[in-house]
Length: 78
Image (cartoon, rainbow, N blue to C red; front, side, top):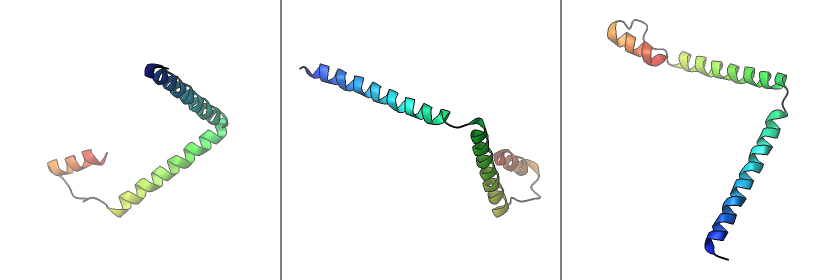
């Protein structure tokens, strides 16, 4: 067997293996009900909000920043 045939077979095997992985992931994804997905999204959102408030309360910025410096800080805070 020539080397290019072996490379071709290895490539075909890689494509098949990738397809199998994608199909399995799709089956797992579709196994969730819409209520379960919604619940997970609410949990993730709550975690993100709590993490953001923890960061904001840990290191508050200067309150009296005015002028260009204050505008730049507000721009980067977004």
